[in-house]
Length: 346
Image (cartoon, rainbow, N blue to C red; front, side, top):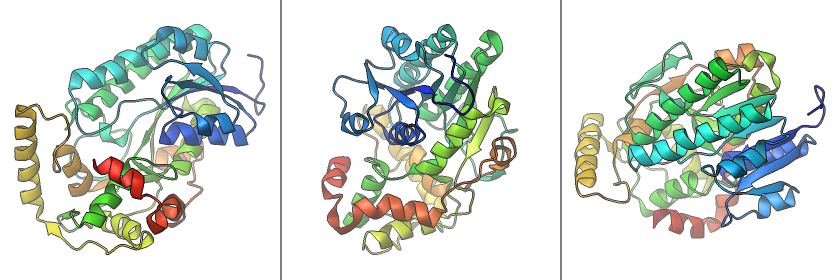
């Protein structure tokens, strides 16, 4: 393409019907870019249609659809991934690593200006983190299949940068929340309503949260900055937020009682290991209520440095945690989320 700096771009977005991809599409539209979205035939595309997005029908395992999406694109923003805290490593690898190679091949063939891959702070070792930065290598043996596949996906992207000269950058968001979230907040709210939520330990451990619009801001900086190629960036809201603060604020904004139940950390850790072991033994199709991934989320201190993103990209989170969580929860007040919460709980 012949677009110059600052001019309109053709942006191919994978995962565009999800939380992050939908917000990337919205921001691209607001900035005057042309949005091309990869959508499955069964996807709800009403949001994208309102934005006037061009649709490419297919999925992340469809090499032809990926080639069609990449053709003529300036940027590719890869927000597609199989997420979750349950499933086999083979299943996560197929969708998060093998399918990614198809996209990277398409990006190389199309000679795109930039590819931004959305990864996860989950790639770091499953331990307490206190200001961990990008000089700490990802864990090779993660707590769960999802984060293991995300670690391998990052390695693929960096290999394409080195081996094929792909101008790619990686952003590692923490725990993402925001408007139009149909999984995380509804599930948390369902547990709060049922009175089944309990903190692991004191609840004073840090949460690596990031408001979706802050993440999108970082994604566009990574797409625009010449310094971002071949680099990886941690992305959070950039302020300390504890599990107790996050869950408490969600409860307050939903008009619910703030939970006070606590499970001692050693008990939670032992339970997570035992219950997950049994569930895997019997081949459970859904994750048990307590497992290693949830222990990591609720039990560990997850504090990561975003100094590299600030220094290299000029990333300054546009929204504070309070602004972000208030905006995210606006649609969940007065029982507005009863239906999705019930669906998530079921």
